[in-house]
Image (cartoon, rainbow, N blue to C red):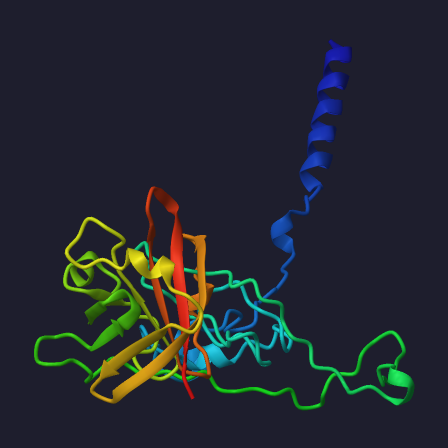
Length: 278
């Protein structure tokens, strides 16, 4: 009995000792980690660039591309991407994507370097790196909006190719509806100054321009609008991929670009490009 009492007393003493211990919990500590206000800035076009977005036209962001070096072509479809004169190409622009397109002109970029010094060697400050001009030659791509150009019947112009006996009206939009009436104007390209691009059916329709594949360098094309008539001389006749859009790029000079399907080759397009006669 005495032993039982000793054991009971020992257990009571241990319980009392344990009750005196006060455990420390995480709630006893406080850490403040307030994040800075406005951590993420606005991504709104108006907040970033200070102007409203101009759908289907030029935007201020098109001229703010610091990551592209002079003379480096872009693979995107919008904005002015060049600062040096390329072989007829100045800028990449978007297209309406009606299934008619051209691209990849493939011409090399001309690198402007200093003239040669004595002995015919290139004059540079570094024997291994040619010296570039301090002010690269640059011409602003030309562009005319189609707004206000429509005639009473809704067309925006007339294209004539005398050697092929082609005489067709041009309608806004690279669509089947336009090509049922004549030629469709690529809505993303200029309608007068610069590079005017149009498309038409190859065959199987009332209005077709499949014969443009037979044009030769120097052949004449005229384009008439409310602004007057321009005469162009053919420079390029070639077959390109149907995903190639580079010949629709805006240019500083005046030129006209025509595209159509290639018979039995849906993956290809026939391209003709002519430059204004001086």
